[in-house]
Image (cartoon, rainbow, N blue to C red; front, top):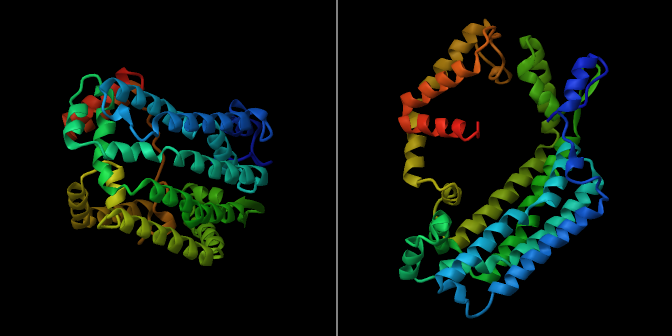
Length: 355
């Protein structure tokens, strides 16, 4: 996270650092901006109207292709607005200053309101899962619904792990006290901690980022020791947080019928469990590659053995400048050597201006 310049920095450095700070006024003028509450109310209104329109016993839109397309289009548009500017603004404020009481209070309030509003949308995903297999196939092969094919494939696949609408609402509501609030509290505590480094009180997040950039091994070790000490002061709470998060996830997995702790995560990323297990086994069999890398790095740094704080330390400075065209060509070749598909994908990103 960019930090405010210290008094010892030059005017040029200070100006450069200042320009890297987030300008949240592009979203709202302040925490008291009336537009913040207005936008939140608009999100709630849109979610409520969608639920009133489609959450009916007959659900005719699940039987007619044209009506289904209209419902999916509205749902897609609404999904983009559901966690829009208000939540993002508050999240960014807290990221910049975890001690921002006004933002913390409003985030808690808006999070609860958003959870309740989104609960009214639970019916839609559950309804998709109840579509008969023959009808699912019809929708998946429809040219009119081609834009939503991937979404529907995922929705139909996830349906087997969905519970009833009331149960889904309960799981959504209990997530905040069972998991989210624990995480937020731990982040807040860590965010407020500082260490004294070279006569300056430095937040531990900033100090952690400074460690790899220190040239002297003795300084890296000293700073890392201070960071770890500050973190250990919060060990008891962090332990409780981990237990709460793990227990909450275990309950959800059991209720949804996931066999392994990692099943839900793998499926959420649309990965194949067999591929992931093969990847884990392959990496585990080749740990020697990492061992060789760190032995080589230790020799380059002139030490017998790397300590934890030395893992990401710089080994030198690359003086040569690479023109953009040369850099792109080198990356393209590396991707092509792995698989031409990767190279083609990179070229398409560059062509479309995505890179």
